[in-house]
Length: 326
Image (tube, helix red, strand yellow):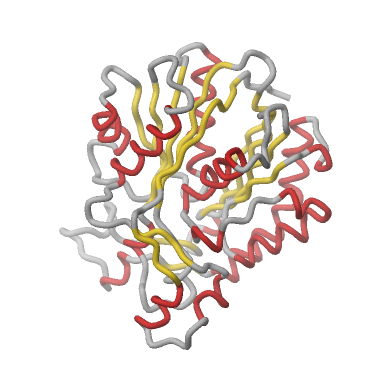
């Protein structure tokens, strides 16, 4: 077991000013009232306005976290996102400028819905090695910009937002006990935005403008998760040296109502320990996990000394989990 002596000292979120109820999506598409919420489990979701850019939302989430931990200056900022504000420079660079941070390490990661855990892994490794003393890990996504608004399975499911956490070297009471990320690329075509990169772009247009929009085979992704998650969770808990019964709070990626119900069945008697905020936020892609963490901390569901489990799946097909003592 490799223990990282790293503590999550503070969290923060940024919620877009506008929250769209599912009833509005039903009306816009001339769907029966109640259809979107019944299908997805999402009652409302944040939708960023034109002036709420990725760097603004990420920096405000970091600022909110720093309000609870402002003793020292940040020396590292990692931003997780599937949709950078622009190709270059990084969203982390633009957010650092908004925060007035000079000379720090700043970079982006994109691991789809597991981006926050990927970013935590890098920042925690730097803290453990001694190359960083205080790091902020932020996640930001404007998922609603990439949706096919006529698709009843995905248009009502996703929401925008940002969330962040501050990491420091632990005094011994807190630690990351296990952090594992695994990718099985046989699911690479099940969850995609095909255009917008070097394959299809302004110079090499895609076959259809819909290739710029998100598409997902939810049923096939669910089958992969159901087949692989049970063994994955068992291995992560074993690596951490804990039992499922020891976990005080489970913070899953808010993938979908189907995904959360599957986790409830898989985790059995731990249903009460699960954070479920899907109805008010939707699937926020890389932001779902840190928003669930912030919710757990601010509502008292995760207290100092508790064991927490963050868990999710991602496009690819990817799985990720972190067991930590908060």
